Length: 238
Image (cartoon, rainbow, N blue to C red; front, side):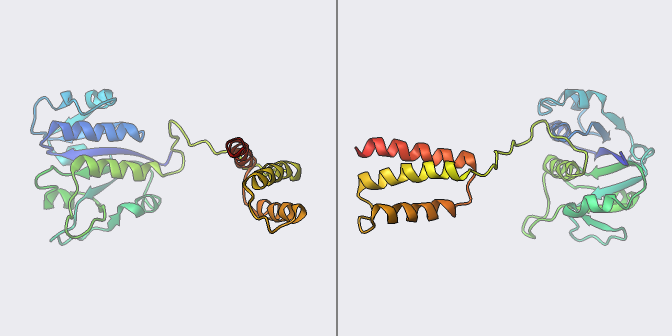
């Protein structure tokens, strides 16, 4: 894999936000959590790290952002951009993966500030680029844990991410002509029972249904569902 990633939380105040960030990382296959100068001493015990206790226990604690970034090849500072004059490239989260393709191979750091003040100007300057999650102007900032999970989700869209469970595609096998004729016959009988379109002769009614069903873009499974539905309705109309 060209890149590996670490999530760096700078001076986080609430242990539960740290735990929620660890859980977000676990959801999307990341495990390298780095915490710089956390306010709470017992931050590793956060109950919000459901299913991510191993990430919390193996997380590295640093006394400075510089130490946390020492082994990384590139770093992006997550910030809301408001009232900031920035010299670095600004990358919005929907374009994060495209930007990552331009970076050298190695460890990439995604850096997040604390819940009250975010990253300081010095912290942002220490990073190579700025990561921004687009929001409406009325609410420019995002909760720390939410910002981490949105970023981890974007990273998971890269090739090679394998989710625990994929949505199984239903069979799109097209029904045969004979299977369609079965449905035509079932619906024809239902029309007779309901006296639907009495203006048509039996031959015209069947021709009408054959054209209608023949033009439907349905799969074999969907056709058999409609056949079963017609049969149930026929039983009720009697």
